[in-house]
Amino acid sequence: MRVPTVLRRRPARLRSVPVLVLAIVLAAVVALAGWYGDHRAGARDQAVRQALATAPAAAKALFSYDYRTFDDSVANGRSFATGAFADEYAQTTAALKQTATKQQAVVLAEVSATGVVSAAADRVELLLYLNQYRRNVTTAGEKVDQNRVVLTMVPVGGEWKVVKATAI
Image 1 (tube, helix red, strand yellow):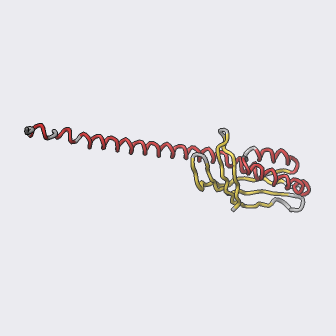
Image 2 (cartoon, one colour):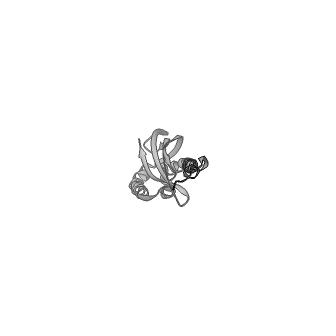
Image 3 (cartoon, one colour):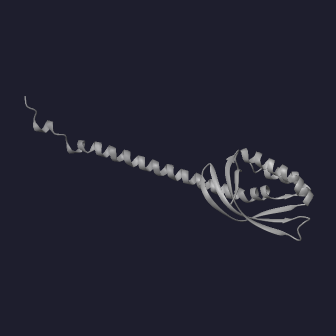
């Protein structure tokens, strides 16, 4: 028995359904990828804003001290540090305390400029131009040291903390 031609052929509308479904799926994938990229960029931008807002105070606390209130200066600096860097900071400042007291050293750090080296939602590296104004009993007047420091910052408990500081 022979099937009539009308029954053997698929209507043109039915042949285009798989193509239409494929086009819809591809459009959904592209839209989802665009949304995800936009979401990641937004999270990264927010991380940069928050790290940039915290960095000047962190640098000032970490790189400033006054021999008269040395322990308070160190505690303030440590509040901006986390992880192994916090331990390293504690060791470095403990070794510095005797010299700072003996020299009656006062160091005030001020950030003059900042820039972003790299950024992700959970980690931001910032380049800071840092002036350290220092005076002590062996120096006439005040001296200024101009430094560049890369601070690597991460979010910890809703605050941005320094996990690494590298002088360059």
